[in-house]
Image: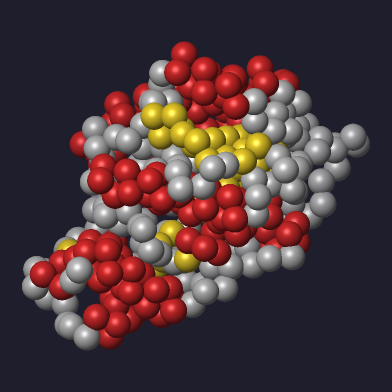
Length: 336
């Protein structure tokens, strides 16, 4: 069974992906900086659960620490690298922009250099739906131009895509990049809306609803997301010999490189999402309506046709079902 090196295994998505791969018999080595962007205890708990499996090991270190990263990779000798670690968050990029340069640009460069040196079979890296920026034609398709990022976070993710394409072209490294769409579920991030809303509602605190609630998101349940990643591990892009690419495919005509949406293909109104959470909790929220925040976008909505054509799979968990699973975990974990 192949050996998979995953960055960000103490994070939300990395934890779920590592758990899925371990259940299928893979050997997994995790790499995580355990930064204090949110509660480190939650990250430690995730890693502790993974470490119960003898086929999982982890290194604690920052992506910017090239020597430590290289030592972990060289010791493991992976067949596949999945790069999920990043400095996340649109609003936090207004407060601490340098963290995004250090982690998302320098750190990703270090990962790509290691993939080149180790000649891995496939490098898979996380991008974001935020790269679509000011685009208004929805659902978003991978072949659309993405030249109008509205936050530094989005700009770093777009830069990662461009960096990845150049490495795929120059060194013939097969690279797939995922554009995620508002991922949620058990063991989620405390800075994300569902987590913050549930915590505030149960404590009787008001929730901040931006753009007066006139927002839409393509909420993607985490189990669906990591299933998509798992299947795309086997969909290794190949450089077209004649430079011809099928219509609708984001495969580069000059490199073994592809970008892919992983989303639920369903635009959900934020107020409907909140009402579903209220119904599940049995409590009405105290609502604090606010204007749109800088760097935010009013709507996201994925076209996941390419994912389905490559893997036969499409995320399909409805938001009410996903919220119910999250609330069950949240109440159990925090005793609320």
